[in-house]
Length: 208
Image (cartoon, rainbow, N blue to C red; front, top):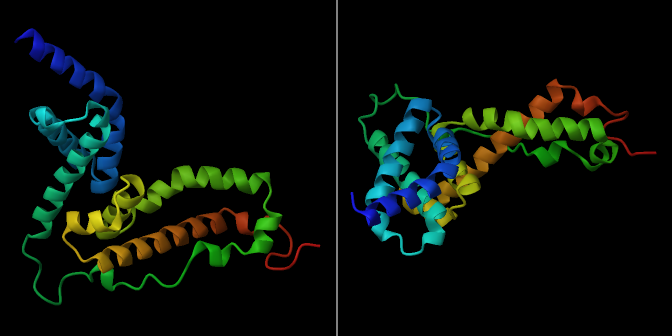
């Protein structure tokens, strides 16, 4: 191995090591399967090493590597989506056909509730958003989960997600809207079960 090759590999590994946890976390959010996530990360890292000469701006290494990770996942996603489907009438309904309802968190957390919101409730929601949001995200149907991870975690635009997934822009918007509604509803139900929504007197009334 030449000194130049060794230096390049050392630089690559030094830049890669701090990103591994984030790469795996993102892959796990997309796949919801630890083994698949590990495979996608390993595949993406291998591709990045082989294509390192395509990286024109070393300062963009992080974004470049996450882009490769996303494309690696999308390739596998499309391959699985192209598999033969069950006979008509036996397959589960498409998530795009499911009624997510008109629920929004802000329709439930009315202004009077926010006025009564104290430190205990705030602490609960801080914990809730860190812990239960991940569980709520994992529980989403795969098309919803993938769309919201690409936009909210990876930072892709709606148009970019449309191209990546090969679906119409309107479908991307619909999936994101329904995914957010489901997440909001899940969080609200967690708060209600924990008693947060009744931690103040006269919910729905005016503060005196």
